[in-house]
Amino acid sequence: MRGARFGDRLLHLYTWLVIVWLSSPIAVMILFGFNDKRSKSNTTWQGFTLRWYGELFDIPDLTVALRNTLVIALVSTVITVVIGTMLGLALGRHRFRGKGVTNFLVFAAISTPELVMGASLLSLFVSGNVPRDANTIIVSHVLFSLSFVVVTVRARVVTLDPSLEEAARDLGATAWGTFRQVTLPAIMPGVLAGAMLSFALSVDDYVVTSFVNGSTVTFPLWIVGAVKTGIPAQVNVMGTLIFGIGVLIAIANAVATRRRT
Amino acid sequence: MTELSAIELEDVVKEYHSHGEVVQAVKGVTLDIPEGEFFSLLGPSGCGKTTTMRMIAGFEAPSKGLVRLLGQDVTNVPPNKRDVNMVFQSYALFPHMSVWDNVAFGLKQRKTPQEEVKRRVGEMLEIVDLAGREKRMPRQMSGGQQQRVALARALVNRPRALLLDEPLGALDLKLRQAMQIELKRIQREVGITFVYVTHDQSEALTMSDRIAVMNDGLVEQLGGPHEIYERPATAFVAGFIGTSNLLTGAATGGELKIAGGRVLVPGHDGEVTVTVRPEKITIGTEEPARESSAVRGTVAEVVYLGTYNSYAVRLADGAEMTVFQQNAHDATATAERGDSVWLSWRAQHSYVIGS
Image 1 (cartoon, rainbow over the protein chains, first blue to last red):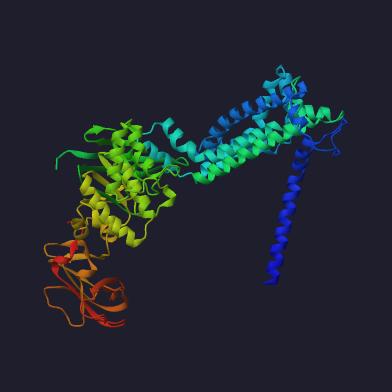
Image 2 (cartoon, helix red, strand yellow):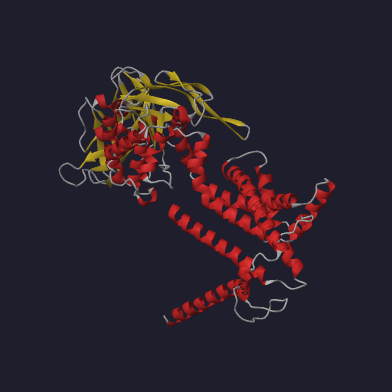
C-alpha cells in the first residue's frame, strides 16, 4: 500500500517534470515578449511592458517575412491536404500496382534528412532553370509535409468500415455525394491532424527553405539572420501569437473529435 | 399477390481472378423471387450466398448472366440507381449522424420534399419502435436498436426489395429470436420482398416463405421450409438443415439391408441413399414389428439437452446414428451408455434422396 502510494507520487513528480521541461522554452518566449528591454539583445529581464504588442508591425522586413510565412504555410497546407487525403484514401482502401513503392516513398520522404532534401531540391531547381521564389518554397513544403498527411489519413481510412460507403451508395448517393457526406466526415480527424502537422512544419521550416528561397525571406529565415545583431522582442510576440492560434486550433480539434466519435 | 417477379437472376456467374487463377464464387444461379416473398439464401460461409446478394444490390457485377428487378434488366446499373436497399451485417450506420439523419439519408439523396421526409421518417421510426430516439447517435444505442435503425434506413425508401446480409449475426440468442419475429411482422406490415442471407438454418426455417440452399456456388435445393426439411434433394441439404442419419446401400424388393437391420424403402431398387431425421426414430429394447425399419446397435453416448435427449447409437458396422427423444414424461433416459438397443421408424420416414 505504502509502496504503491510512493510510486504514485513519483509518477506525479515525473509527469510534472516532463511538462515543465516541454513548456519552459514556450514560457520563456512568451515572457520575453513582455520584456521592457533597452539593449539590442533580449536575454535579460528588465521589466514588464506591452510596448512590443503595440509596435508589432514596426519592423517592415519582419512583417513581410511573417506574411510570407503565413501565406506559404496556408497555400502549401491546402495543397498538401488535398493531395495527401487522396493518397491516404488510395493507400488505405485500394490495392493497385505500385502500392508498395508508393508506401515506401511516403516513408522515405519522412526519413530523409532535411539537409539532403533541401540540397537535392536546389540542384533540381537549378538544373531545371526554375527561378527560386515563394513558389519553389511552397512546392518544397508540400513535398516534405505530404507524407505526414498521408500517414494520418491512411491510419484513419484503414479503420473505416468499407460497408459505410456501400451503404451510402445503396441509399442513392452518387460517388461524390458519398465522399462528401460519409467518407470525408469519417476521416476528418485524420485530415485535420494532417493539416495541423503540415501547417506547423511549414511555419517553422528553416533548413529546406534556406536552400530554395531565392530572395524571398520567411519568418524563420529572418530570425536566423537577426541572431547576430540581436532578436527584437516582436519576434517573441509573433511567436506567442502563432503558438496561441495553434493551441486554439488543437483545442477545437479535440472538442470536435470527442463530439464526433 | 401479383405474379410479377421482384427479382430474377438468370444463370448468374461471378468469377474472381486471384494469383493468375480464376475462382468461381457463384457458378450459375437462376432464381425467380415473386413480389412480397420472404426469401432466404442459406448456406455455409463461402457458398456464394453473399456474393449473390451483392450482385442483386449492384456492388458486384456478374461475370455472366442477367439480373432483373421487376422485369427490368439492371445488370449494369450502379447500386445508387437500383431500387433495392440493403441492411448490412455491420449495420453500417453513419457514425457522425443522428438516428434521424441516418434514416432520412436515402430520401435526401432523392431530393424528397422536406415535409414528406419528415412524415416518412417519423412513420418508419414508429414501425421499428424507435420513436422518441431521433436525436440519439448510433454509438449511444444497443445492438438491437442499431439493427432497427439500419432496417428503418433501408425501408423508408420503399424499395422494391430489401436485402438483408446476416443482419442478426451480432445479436445474442434471446434478442435474435425476438428480432426474427419482429422482422417477419415488419415484412408483413410493409409488404416488401425480403431477401435474407444467413448461415443459420433455424433462422431461415422460422422466417422464410422459400429458401434456396446454396453450396459451392450453386443452388442445391429451392423450396419451402417444410419441403427442404422433410424432402432434402441432396445429401448436403440433408446434412446442413438439421441433423440427418444417412444410410446407403443396394435395395432389393423395397428393402435395404444394413449391418444389424433393415430399412424399408417401398418402390425402390438398386443403389440408394436414405435419410432419416433423428426425431422420427424410436429407441427401445424390444424387437420392433416387421412393418417398421429397424436396426440393432449399442448406445455410445447420451446427451441431456433439456427438452430432449440425444443418443448416439453405434451400429454393427461401426456407423453411428443420432436419435432424439423428447423428455415428455420424465427426465430419465430410456437407455444408458453401453445398452444394446433397437432403433425403429416408420417406412414413410425413410426419405430416399433424389427421388
